[in-house]
Length: 378
Image (cartoon, rainbow, N blue to C red; front, side, top):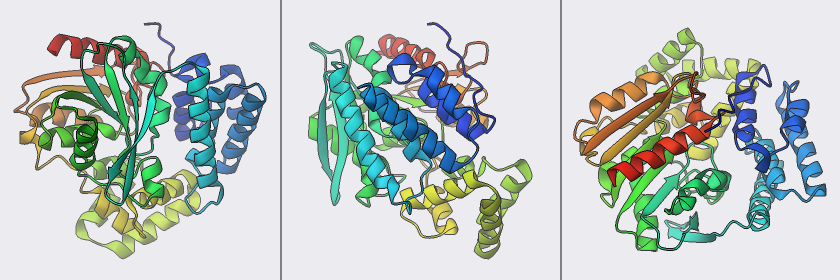
């Protein structure tokens, strides 16, 4: 696998990571030269939106719908739910992805699986005489469409792939089906809908937690991949702050001091647009109306009470420079999941080109590791 590497395009860490999230898919998803030229000097959220929508217009004029879809996904990413442009841009982006799949000749079927008061969007790609089914979910801020290029390798290797959205993800949040820790319920609905009796489940980003949590209760999952390993949502959602503030925020949450918590984070949000977006987005996907309520909801995303129920073959992945999920969660999962049928773990390094969160910059190295592992343990 050729190492593409994580590129330094923009000096703002969050912006740079999201830019690399597009660049990692290569020429099929973007024009790298144009992206770098237009995004390197962006330093506000409005400039971010304008740069990506400009690129989308250029791509559409050139009939490159895959490029347009990834660009509009990035333009939508940092818009708040209160921004009237967000929902319209979401719809435009999804339409572009599906036009792009048709242009690229990607064979797939889209489904709406009944769930609670609405439905879960799924995409299924099934080769002839497939080996087994691989169920894939995203995490805190993903659309299933953006993973199609990545999981296509699984299909090419003879696996039936089902991409699923769960509560708080993609279209669900617009249906007011909000982020929940109990991911085993949407997983069961999807597996039952498709009549799947045995599968491997891969959880991407926050999906690493969802996959492990689902495996604790849903035994149709025979093998589970946490890409990357995660076991504590509250820890992740406070890890973004500098060390002292992180410690203080966790202390305020633990002590139930909501007034001080709101005062502190409101002050931080006025000075840091990315922190402001993160707190707003957290309330949007959890369906809460305050910072304390959001953190209370997120704190339920924890494996403490279910480690011992995970008894499948387990693969834990991590990047040594992951700035979203603390490395302690990878180590804790290895130590606490004691009843696994088998346990395999791998932490990717800078030298390998996979040191970032979900191996952005060289996600192929993670895909290869997952495919090798599934072939070996099946």
